[in-house]
Image 1 (cartoon, rainbow, N blue to C red):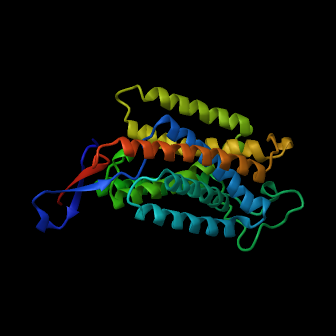
Image 2 (image 1 turned 90 degrees about the vertical axis):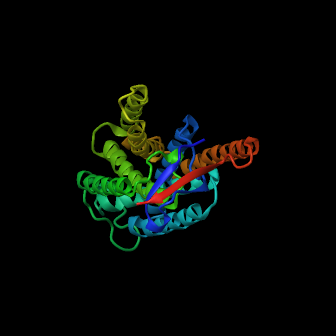
Image 3 (image 1 turned 45 degrees about the vertical axis):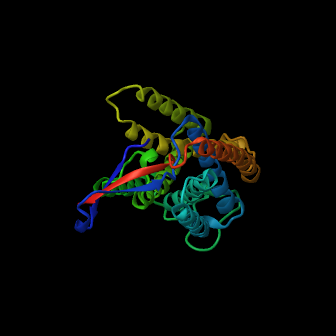
Length: 301
C-alpha cells in the first residue's frame, strides 16, 4: 500500500481529518519504464525533425501543432480515472515531440548550419529565436527550477508512484514538458557543438546514466533527485540517438531518414506499450478489490 498523500491549504472548516480514495495514474519507475522512456524520447526527436525539417513545416508551425497535440493528450490523461499505459506514454511521446521543436525554435535560426543544402526557409512564420544552446538551456533550467519550487511549496509529493492528485499530476506534466525540451537542447549541443558527434554524445550520456545507477545504491543520495536527473538525461540520449539514426553519413549519422526511423521506433514503442497494457490488466485483475486505490488524507492548512 502506498503512503498517504497529505494535502494542505484546504478549507479550515474541514479541520477534522477525512480520508478519500483516489486511483494511481502514473507508473512505477522500473527498468521497463526507462526503456520505454528512451524509446519515446528517441521517437520524439525523429518525429519532431520529420515534421519540422523533412516536411519543411518549420519550427514555428510544428511547435504550435505539437504543443496542441500535447494539450489534448494531457487533458485526456488528467481526466482519466486510472493508469492507462497507452495514454500515459502517448503524453510522454507528445512532450518529446513538442520539446524537440520548442528547443529548435528557441535555440536555432534560419542559418545554413541548421538547414539542408539549398534550403533557405522552413515553413511559415519566424524561423527561430536564435538564442543558442547556452542561453536556451539557462532559460529552460530557470523555468524547470521555478516549477519545482512551486511544486515544493504546494506540498505535493515528488515521488511519481505516490502522485494521486490533480495538482500533483499537473505539476508533474509541466516538469516533464520542460525537462524534455531542456534535454533536447542538451542533446543537440552534444551532437552539433561539443565536437563529440552523435555517437560520442550518446556514449557520454549513457555513461552519466550509469553513474546515476551506481548512486542509487548510496543511501545519502535522494532517489527522487536521481530520478529527475535521469529523466532529463534520457532526453539528450534520445536526441543524440535520433540524430545518429537520421543525419547524413557525412555528418556522422547513419542516414536512415526521419520517416523510416520514426516508423521503426513507433513500432517498437507501440509493442512496448501493448506489453505494458497487458501487464497492467493482469496486475489489476490479480489485485483484491479496492487495493489499487490509494487513501489520501486531507487536512486543513
